[in-house]
Image 1 (cartoon, helix red, strand yellow):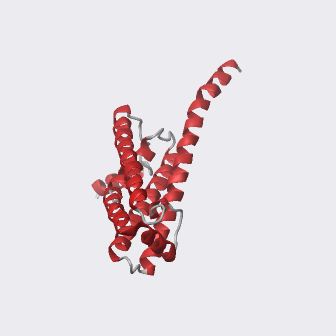
Image 2 (cartoon, helix red, strand yellow):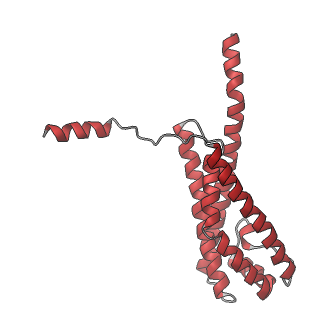
Image 3 (cartoon, helix red, strand yellow):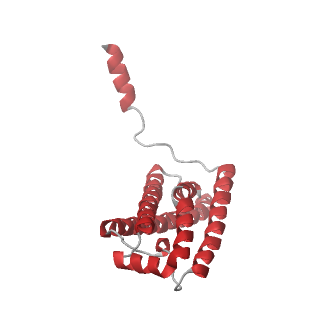
Length: 194
């Protein structure tokens, strides 16, 4: 009986939050290299899409929100060759990009406080889940074209909007940490002078 009480006491003394991430140059450089490779691939692949598209257009992933009719028009404008290249892009983007970019967002200038770390993790996870949902829906729309199920398109739109909001907010959080990083030495110097 006393053993149960002591273990229950230990459980309540645990911190309620996980420790904050620490910065590792090696891991960050690995992520930056992977992300740079993905960006290089996407720039070249999107140029190929534009070269073979029937009508100049952009891919669904680049939109901020879309409707079923917008998705249909984009896929129609891509033409068969453009859709084939877009399928290839979607395969690469499907899981690799959300994982690599999520980790990059979490490990670039990691927050020093548990609260800000939790917020950053929430934003990075929102980005990754939104991108994954969007990628699943884009894959379905590419495979079912010319018939695009409205529910799939709207679900993809929600994922798309969540992706862009999560990504933008996480980048803003990184910029905030950068400003805080530069301000900390100034604050210490002012305290020492005062």
